[in-house]
Length: 420
Image (cartoon, rainbow, N blue to C red; front, side, top):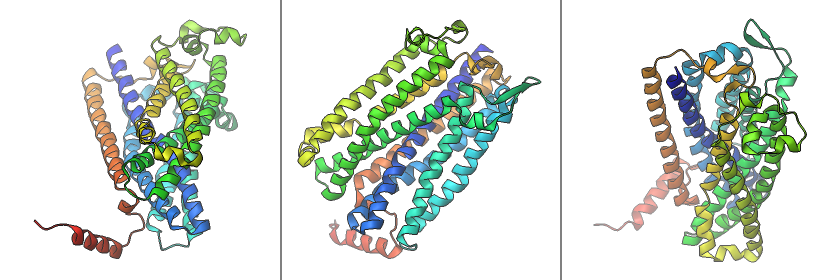
């Protein structure tokens, strides 16, 4: 049974880690696209329209593939974690159901209307649709974090006949653990979105692919937002550490020795909830990445003066190389949050070994291999498509393009293609 538990935990870690990468890009890019389109709606300048279509298309690609990974993730609870469902389904199920309704119905509907509304809807109506896309994306994230916050620090419930039932909805929705995590995730998402935009823009500027105005504006916007987001991420993270020290002293005793004593808190039953020692390495990596981006980001922002940064190819190359590093910090933070509360599935209430389904080794191993392959394919597809359209630049955008535009572009391509 120990082997089955390890496989089930590994499968859940793989699927949620991969899916979270899509979520963080969605949350990170949406406000940028909304801002770009707002400027276009107000000023009517073509440069803002091109920026909106270019980054909006990358947003749509990530969203579409991310939906697939989200559907796969829903199978986890029914397949391997029937004990968790039996104990906390009355509480855990409600936020998950709300997230599904928001993400798969409202968010998808608004995004579809936005995609096909180019040139067909008034500018401000079309803009409103993407604001609704952004809002519902963040509302969806809120419901997920509410569910996870209950697992980290159960509140607003009563236990009857061995199962938790909701007793106080407001306590569940205002769980300090969930709200602190939400603020930390939002700041980290804006950091990732900012450096993704800055890195792609830097690639175009370094190679001189054209549209310097488009990429220069995007570079400046991405770096400015990412700089402030890096400091906000750090502040929200340390606030979260203080909070977790009060609710999960065993986790803090490992990742930040001395914090429990510093706050003057009783150690509690630390031995029952002490995180594995290797988690500290991931915590330290997350802190290191945060500090790097805070101070390197300050240098980048200062180099924006007089557009100095746009003329330094080595710096532009560095910006492109910096794109993937924040993603590793995000995964490290997730591991600290989830693995750090072991051996509890619901902290202090339900052990992980009691949450797993009574399955044999073979089926769990088979599902682990299958889900891992599916997620690797999804991540590879997402990366390939984003990289492909990012290299094409604004001229490669298909958002808002009519059939006549496509035929005109095809004829233009044929006219400049040499015959062999």
